[in-house]
Amino acid sequence: RQQATDVLESVLREISKSLAGGHPVKISSFGTFAVRKKTERLGRNPRTGVSAKISARHVISFKASPIFKKTVQEKP
Image 1: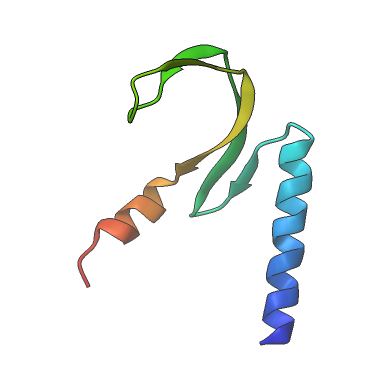
Image 2: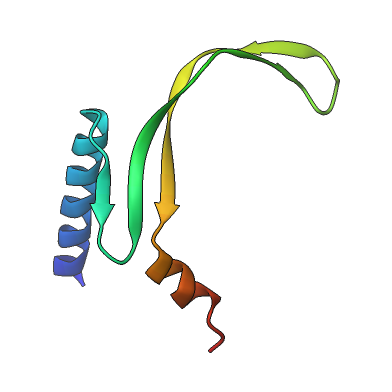
């Protein structure tokens, strides 16, 4: 169990480094992680209705592979 945890943490660390460097990460039969830049926009607090400026930022996006989508959609 500890060895599996160490391996997983190592893989996640490498994925994080690659994304921080601006490189997409493709995992075969699973999907692709990439960093996208979102522009500044005007948003609204849904509770109060007050408008607020949402600053530009970078977000992580994930696109599932067709194989992964098919596996998830299949009924057990």
